[in-house]
Length: 582
DNA sequence: CAGCAGGGGGCGG
DNA sequence: CGCCCCCTGCTGA
Image 1 (tube, chains in turn blue, green, orange):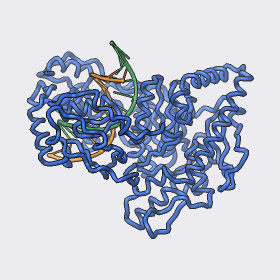
Image 2 (cartoon, protein in one colour):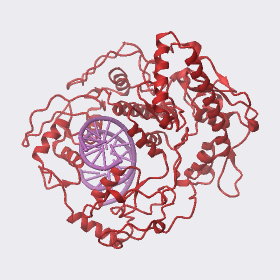
Image 3 (cartoon, chains in turn red, purple, orange):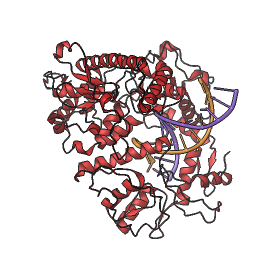
Image 4 (cartoon, chains in turn yellow, cyan, red):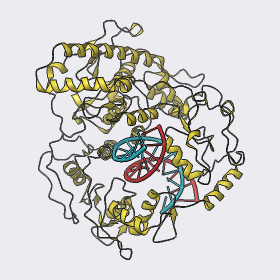
């Protein structure tokens, strides 16, 4: 999900420089050129946040508005470089700080996580143009993968995704990564040994060491196998994914999460061959698409002989689309159209025939398409599926109309069309979706609606200030007066106001600009997501709703995380009593 | 607007 | 581990 968020917010490109503005390090000129208008004093931009999130957890405090200085500047100033330079590079590339879990470039002051520093060094300080244009006959090369992307789009009018594999399979970058990983392992081991020999009397460090020790003892089997790249400086979660910011206390969830970083999907639908990385997703898919067929849990797991063993994700995982990756072997012929083929008992096809040793599903290779898609295996199959769908049982029926949906969530979302829970504070307009209310408010009342509470701002600046003060979301594209010098409360704050916490001191935002504004919006979405993900968000809680009354649906607005599907929960639960689930 | 896939967490065996 | 629910984004009608 994070990779999707990052991809959507910031594009496919992941090869930008380090950009860890947390420590206020000036970006090297080459990197600034790659992403102009970014300034280090912005501390953390959407772009920087995305970079951080792709490589591991940011240091504590980075996700907050204020950036408190670290408590132990001595430990955090210790940077250790490798004894031997990397041979072909004639450089030690970077030094490592186990306290900060960050690397510092050997040739400049750039600081960041391993992958970022490796990419940064390769692109900025290496003479080698490691990334080459994949098109035959073209000699273009760049130190940055994004350079090849730009070249492909600009000079060849080609899909930049064709260069995606360069990110992952570049030997030079791999070598750099391994080199820095070895350094990290060595330094971290030495630091840990030193900590064990001389326990820090300081309370803060004692706590940290105990925490690290506990983590080492408990998460070694999983997360350390994944490279232990990120560590858990936040101290909140026992299992921390090395490939993304995910962290959890549950080992089973972590194990399940690890699957999303693997290419192989160990489960598949034995009717349409669509592959999944979770068994329950297969079941959900099955009950939606093949509801009239018997579901057999024992047949969804692809056998070991079929599934090519996939190693645990490396410490650094690049979120590049596999679409451009050439398949390792010519894929087996697409499975026969499943609908007419399977016998009544739906015998699983023999493993050698299925031969699922194919490249991971890519958009360019949609062979086992779901039956509902236009690209269904055959018209007959699609027709059969359609018939099945018409005949198929529908379990969730609307109490207002004849509609019925495939699951409870569809019902909840559908109910919004009747209830229109998003009511305009300034007129009688009601909308089924939050974004429509926002559009209405903007066009009709010329206000900016907060997506997290009923607040209506007079302009973007006021909205940004509100986001910062009430939701701790920094809109970096706008200059917001720092401190408590708030603008007067907007008159449009008509409805029940969201409780506005005391404003926290935050860094003043940089200058305005469309790109940065877009990034700020992306950052806001990302922050919002983070808040929603950990359940600690300060989302607006709608007041208690009146008992369900079908004749007069309550108009109280509800501002949920899912703005589109915002049927009030209590309300929805009540609705279940009035809607049929059969 | 709805169907679907793919994330996350809770819960029980 | 399996199941369930919730949430989110994408996509097509």
